[in-house]
Amino acid sequence: MFHENANYQSVKVLENLYGYLWQGIGNNCNTYLFTYLLEGKHPHVLIDPGHISNEFGSPCFDQLLAALHKDGFDADSIGLIINTHAHPDHCEANQALKQKNGEVLIALSQIEDEFRKTVGEKLYALLGMTAPAFEPFLLLREGQLNLGKISLRLIHTPGHSPGSISIYWEERKSLITGDVLFVGSIGRTDFPGGDISLLEQSINKLASLEINYLLTGHATEYGSILTDPDKIKRNFQMVRFFF
Image 1 (cartoon, rainbow, N blue to C red):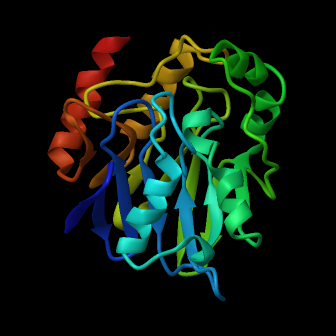
Image 2: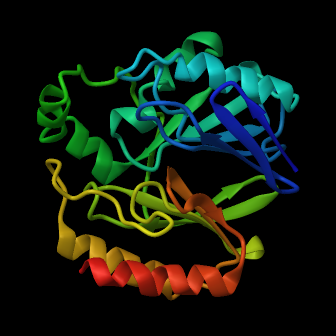
């Protein structure tokens, strides 16, 4: 099931997992939503809310909220934001969501939080941007993260940035890669904190997993999501030619 809303394509990947795939002009990330995991009034977990607005002035965050609303979700129903890494096109909208829902918690890997407050500042200056203003409530490490109904495995996958994490839902063999791995491509390593050797190691680590759903941080000409295990294995074989 999918529908398009402004510049997002909404895809119901699994019963408790939606994808909001950026289709617009300019840079912005794909966003993913785990639904009905947490107790209380804020049961949903959002992965990478993206830009507030991008270099072309597209109102990315407002359009994301509209796409969520069409599926029956709103800002106030989100209890946790998990960032795969701290580049602005993945985390700039953290604070915008926090302003709409003061109870939402923000999570980032501890390594990435340390990076963004030091070397990462040079990246923002390079892009002519100021660092996104947010403070994580949860500092994540590699290992299991229990979220009510499900357990997610957080995998440290540096290379695109030092503290990048990939998120593996082992029960459903679903992997969210952030900017480590795309369909037919790999994440950039020419930003401060990038390292092509570490990226190769991270992709090799992910290739050892059993994956039925590959959910990437950005679209390429080949797409954003792969849902065929054989195609996913071929994708890993293909991207190894970059190294």
